[in-house]
Length: 398
Image (tube, rainbow, N blue to C red; front, side, top):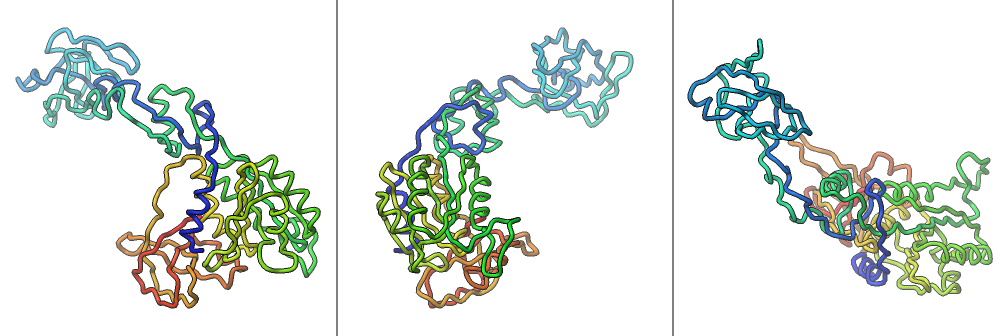
């Protein structure tokens, strides 16, 4: 099972998450499930882009350099009308262009005294100078956002501009993060020499939250078959996605695959031809729950989460798929085994500002300390081979 085939196997068995209508303020990080169309032209009127005075450009071309200020046009007010060509209307940025005017002279190019504006020699008389024309950015009814768009700050602003107080988005999946193992001890608790800190669950939850997932549960289960079966049975009834860390390899206490089978979770695959993270397990529960069994070594856990779990959940939410980022290696890398190799990297710019992927190989899949200061990992083809500096590979960021 290659990484690409594993990805296809996961996506082909996912159940599309339901749709809900939410207030726009609650949709940041959500996936849009309807098209958004322009409510009206954008800008909806000829919009002043500089504080100054609005005049008729033909008057400027006739050589007139002094105008009596007729009135002031504020933003958010109905447009005034220029009474005669030798007058000017003071205007504010964002205001409607007064009727009869087609040119705005910025305050930096005028002097105002006793109700008159005197123009300096740098004034430009081009029609619609310093004016954002109506419909220049988009026309009424134009498609602004497509279903499948991830709603970030710019997309939220676009939806608001279209008058959308609520939008239809994918429901957030409830995700349960489960770590397994007798040796794991919570941060802050007393710890013995033969025990290790429970860190994987924190990395998994942080990754999910960073990508906008808010419904995240957490559990730690000892290496006890009955306890594991009882707790996983509960989680499968309350969560659409279960992400386990540990218990999926070939050891005596690697009980996760056995217990999941007892609970009616259908195994789709177990093991991927990759390093690290080869023992990864994936299955589908009786009600379509997605169950990911990630290897317990910290580097493997995080790599598999980024490479498979995050894209899978995004696909179930209807998020439009984006191709991975591609960067060149900043140094040669030798891959010995005939397995896809995931290599942590730091992304650094050269003297020309071009980004490069600098290899930062860990000291094995348990060396999570080496991940601090890295930006993600590259996916390199199976070996044996040496990939030179400049070899372009897909990059997955933390």
